[in-house]
Amino acid sequence: MKYTAIAAVLAGLFAVPAVQAAENTVNLYGIAQLGLTIADNGDTNKLLVEDTGSRIGFKGEELLGNGSKAFFQIESAVAMDNAGASGFASREGWLGLKGDFGTVKLGRGKTYFDLAQEGFDGFNGNSTMISSLLIDGAYYRMNDSIAYETVNMDGFTGKLQYGDMEGKDSEISPYALIGSLAYENGPLNAVFAFENQKDLPASFGNGSKTLKDPKTGAYLSKGLKIRNYLLGAGYTLPTGTNLKAAVRLSDIDGAKRNTFIAVVAHPFGDVTGRIGFTQAGDIDDVENTGGSYLAVGVDYPLSKRSIVYTEFSYARNDSAAGGLMSTTAGQAAGERKNSAWTTGLIHLF
Image (cartoon, rainbow, N blue to C red; front, side, top):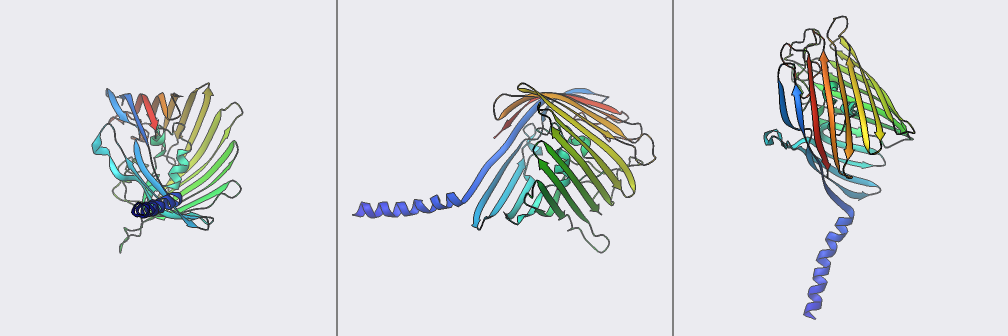
């Protein structure tokens, strides 16, 4: 009798977690990626062991009823080549609700403009082209963000976020308003994205570059009014070839630039070949303030979660562009060209 009672109590204790497990999920995920890079900044040629974006994260959901869920995400940078560059919750940190009404969340993370741009990074597994897109004040990750995403409506999805407003004082009223509208239907996808920044610091950090005066190339010590617009589309052919192209219009306190982005990816059996190109035009009528970026590479899946790749990237800047475009090699003072050849491994978990 005594053992029967104990068994009943134990059964009751273990029954509660079983119910909770059905209603709650917490998952561990991440990417480990390292490569060997031969980098040439036009002045020095050197060998690098390079972490190309390793991370580890936790995300979870709780069922609330009526189709609604509470969720969270915490994602941290893991620099496998240099522990000092790691940081807890340094990439993403979100808490919110989602359901038939869409998704509402608070926190910090990549902006909707950046995510739209990354759709045109043909090497998105290790973000090879992202350095050519984070120019002219493009915002990478936003702090203090209030964000909303619609549900999918016949292929259309809208996203809007507002943030970085906490620096307001008697003289300035900073903020960033960023959004996107995307459409996807089978092999076709298209996106429009915008960002409107005001009085934000000149340095955005977390992968984005310190802002420069687009006409003089001098580093800025204060924020400006920045507007960026992106319009692009992609299509996958029956052969598996994926074609993408986008145009970006930038306006930094009245100084304007047009940037063109194109990407092609084609499967050759299990191997996928990729080529990406970014062309940044001159600022208004100021000559030699543009630049270009080219990336070529192939990748091969060793398994469902492990990928080996090799790729070459090359950046060229006009004589008055400063370090507008740069590869892993960086930009040597007084030089206008730089390149990097990387061979590495990506593991998903």
